[in-house]
Image 1 (spheres, rainbow, N blue to C red):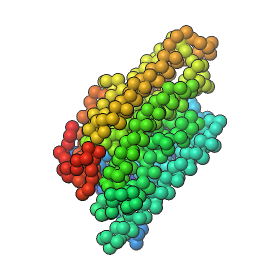
Image 2 (image 1 turned 60 degrees about the vertical axis):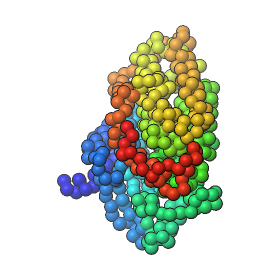
Image 3 (image 1 turned 135 degrees about the vertical axis):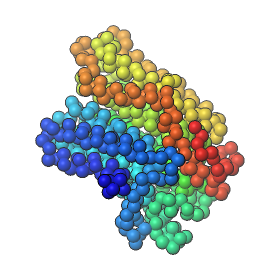
Length: 518
């Protein structure tokens, strides 16, 4: 028991992988239930992690550390704060839903499919709890492998093209990040006499900044390349629609709900607190790109004939809000950006599940192939309506809180760009509600639609927790912010408190912030 208490995070991270390896020996017919049990057990363990986290405790909690490559200053160090806590909970919450949602969709190489899903969960959890930047990189790269095979083997007709595009975009950005990691470790030796890749040690580095050709700006760009591809930020977004359309349903859910959040998490955990003057130099540029992403993603989504591609481009728009709020570097906008990441994970994950359900029935995702679905699938239409309203940020749902906080906080940094971003709220409502109207209302346009069956018990069971989360996050946001805000404040203080940071308002931010801005 003592070992378990001191290795709780390691157990959480590697339980899915161990469960997946054992699952290879389970009969194929039982492998899906074995995988679901493993994901549910991991979720239960994450609830224990949540219960051990203390809001007024140390900055990083439940820490574990062991030497790995001591000559290079690389260690196996894990820990969590409020920023990593809720992304861990989102991951373990959605994984059993994605697995159970795949029960009727995957019929070939079943064991291998669920092995890859559970392996992917280990890589994602590892990235969120790593406090050594090299260990973070190992888990970051490990996420590529399961997703590569999931799209490449169980994807659609253009799966090879989509897989290679996804792999190459992510790999190039990641290699730039690796170069930056080596440089930071070297600079730690220059300044402190020893190599170190511990994130808390690298926070203490003093690097030259202020112009493009200084260390902070160039290293920030290297990290930003990796994180912006993952978000994905315009114009590095083009891999995402292809990957989403070709991926199996569970792959799309995890890709949208968790993997895209790695970019935002990377900015918050690494780039901002380590390289504040690099952030200051490129702040306006990234806010401009975020505003473009918001409007561009909405406009392109509006003309998509494929429901899944429409949802994919909506992710470009929604994640643009995340980047806008982060780079505004206002406590309200940063908290809103983080909350938007959680909201997007729940709402867009639910949308991809619903698209998968209708695809299993009709084997098409073309909007023109549907019409009048409400008449034959009323329960499905009701659930789809709730998730759609969440996606367009209806007050009372989770989407409203994040977008409102982002726009409120970003207005202080740049009113003009925030005004442009606000139009994305209108465009988002247009493309989502127009799609909903064409699919759900009017006459039944195809005789195949007359024979469609409504949600079954399994489908209703996997959508119910998501619907509950949509309303819980919309009505009780402070439940999340109470554990999140102290960590957000520390991150902003570390970033803005460094000498020389100037916000877009031209006024240096104070080095201290209130303990919680909730």
